[in-house]
Length: 256
View 1 (cartoon, rainbow, N blue to C red):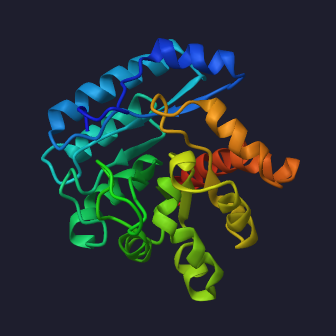
View 2: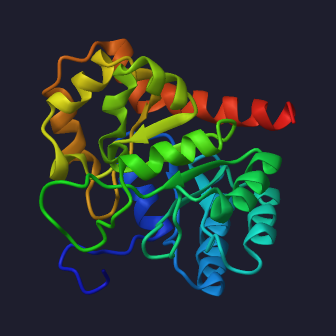
């Protein structure tokens, strides 16, 4: 992935500058989810330090290698230092089958104890291939939700199309703990996908994500402006759904 022509690393300073230019008040920020737990800790140290320097502007997420020794301890360490969630984890690159409860139960239990949501990389299992796409899609994501109904989980890149199954009554129930983000939207779908999400009844579960610095905010502003979303729907997409996710995750931890 590092050799890809589109890959770029971002720094905290460049992110804050980008946010200031585009009137963005705060952002969820994560490092790269390596298979090596030591590298994940390095990622976390940088993101947590940035969050402490730009308090309120950067909402940190932690990355771990889920099946590696010390992953649970690292989740709890990051939670103590202010991490709101764990992710974006990369199942294929980290050799994690998210449909297998035997591989996920320990991480899920730790996150729930700490009041953290989990975010996974997912991808549509049709269409063109690209570096980092992976084989984890809607089927695996749905199985994770059914295995762990009390966990709050975000599936990146529109959940590989999982949102569409919210139109099925039994799947709407099964996916009651699922959220989806819009990262890489301009590369994957046209503007009408977001209208379909609201029409399916999943409009209160879609989170605005960009994959910055590979894609920057103006690309998304252009595509959102092409939609027929109401002001209330735009507000849900850009901020309110994320605030709801944080509140619900903390409440669930308090109920344990």
